[in-house]
Length: 423
Image: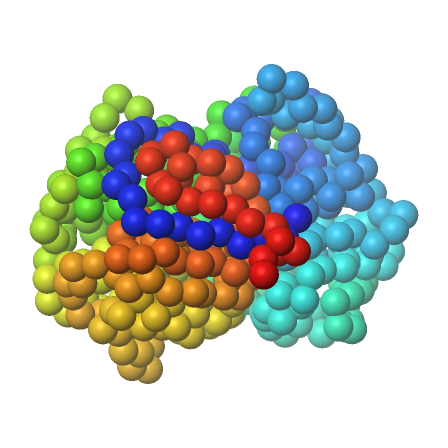
């Protein structure tokens, strides 16, 4: 259902439970697919991106059942040839993890995708496998062409391409090496390595890269998925302008790249404490900060919000890759912040924001089909002088379908209106 949301000035306070980490869920699902036997994943929460990965699992031969918040996946080991095109919706992780696996099936595999994903780059795979990938608009045909050996991949477009290879190289019949040039989002590689280790797969770090022994077997296992720091980040920043917001469950020893939001809030002078199950932030007067978002680009939205009410000029560095996400996130953040009357400037690879803004202006903003922009606009709306109207707010279902319900539970005054009902 297409809908808009109107968010009115509100005072947020309370406790919110964020969904399990989408990054960890994707990896657990692919590990379950590649294991012979049954894996149990808990807690399991659906979103559009996760449903896209389930489409991949089904196409490659896996089956599953959901009961009491637990997903039981019966894996197949080596992927089987799919009978029809695989719909990966707008999920870059689903597609980029699945492309190397498609090459294991021995035949052509066709993926179909939403327009937003079709516009995102696949250059690292195209350079590695020029004869195996054929794109035609929203369709992608993948042919066999992965033989292992010594592989060098461009990491400047993100970590998902290297992760996709790390999932498939253990199946090959000869030892492979993988070297990543210009690596970015390195903590996400660590998440992949931890997932593989837990599945009994051996990956050896060497010479700035990895050596992957051949003919390995994935072990089915039960996995508990920790809460998502990227989805928690905006709530935690919002808590700095309220009596207090607690977000859980958040593991203090998490490997998630977006856990760095905790350190940035503290470095800026924000009040945030560790609780039994997560973190609680509360009313603060933060100061300007510098944040490098090369390894955690999804935090750009929380950093932009924090910078807008921090004293002085804050800088978000290494923002280049934001232009190749669900939207051109440099442009969409700039558009939203300016409409809220925030002093923001984009300079080459950096975003500069001067605060503090005492109250945002009410505004109307297009979602650009970007779930994280919707969440930023909604949180900002609770701090504004007048209502913030978010067009096509259903984009939030990509990662967090219950976002507006949870925001309302903290006291947000909002209304959801079907697109057809808007005069």
